[in-house]
Image 1 (tube, rainbow, N blue to C red):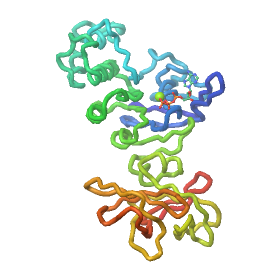
Image 2: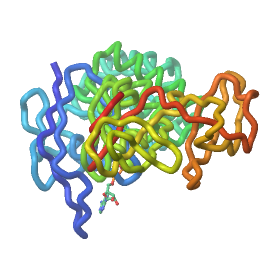
Image 3: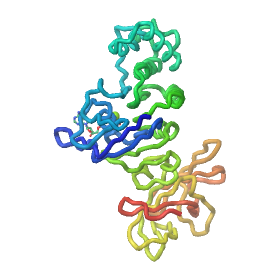
Image 4: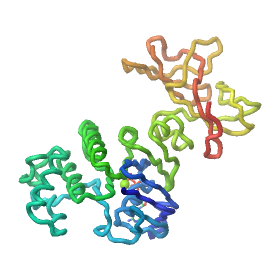
Length: 344
Ligand SMILES: Nc1ncnc2c1ncn2[C@@H]1O[C@H](COP(=O)(O)OP(=O)(O)OP(=O)(O)O)[C@@H](O)[C@H]1O
Ligand SMILES: [Mg+2]
């Protein structure tokens, strides 16, 4: 059982930056939670506080019911992998991994056994004698991961561990890490600003902005039902259209959509795949550009006032730039004062 409990944690740096602001989160035993947010939203600061590399101004962090808020890193049951992997370059792979175990005074035979098992786990069996400088970037990241895993932490903390790698390798490594995490059932907090990474790996995603939680949900829910306009705009592609509601009708330029909410300003959120187009005598938008991706097409459209919207279509060859079309939203949500107030 390894449960991480973060309660009302705040970190203000000297100079007044509120990096993390009254943040709370519970991570269940064996769960992988992704912290997802734009640069500067406080993800690393939060992770560093869990790992003991940064002290919160207020709040509590407990692991399995034991308070660790003010313990130094080496006295916490956590293992952290940093973005810049920081392996010891004067040691070979084996020694990098054995170091922490030696500090714990583990017998040599047992150290060898453990290191070999963990190298096998990360796909680097037989690499013990290599110097870390003789490894590729992806292999170095795997050594960094192995170095954390070999100490059998209760909580694994990963801060954008694949950020420096190319797309292809990143995709492969995140699958491997997910596999390892599930096999070991290790409770994990994973920081990323890549939404694909979060959507594909996480049991739950915490979307962060300005040191606060915007939404905590399963990946599919975050995508299908974003609770704030920020999340709606941050995850996937979304048309966010500002307009006015009057007598149950949302209006922006020539676009009108029935919206049964009180009169006033509103932001309409429609996914491109939920915005159908049809030929019309009274067009609401004109086609700006059609991009054919083979499997589908993406159409950029302009409302009369210049507002740009996007639609995903099955047959892009039917459309031409300059053509007028009607817009038919199949599913949408509406936001007011930063809150979702309607969902079709
Ligand atoms: N040691 C520090 N001293 C002062 N301000 C800091 C320090 N570390 C971080 N900050 C500030 O705190 C805020 C949050 O930073 P943090 O590194 O947690 O963001 P992040 O979400 O990890 O961003 P990124 O995706 O770019 O890594 C930023 O405004 C940053 O400038
Ligand atoms: Mg960071």
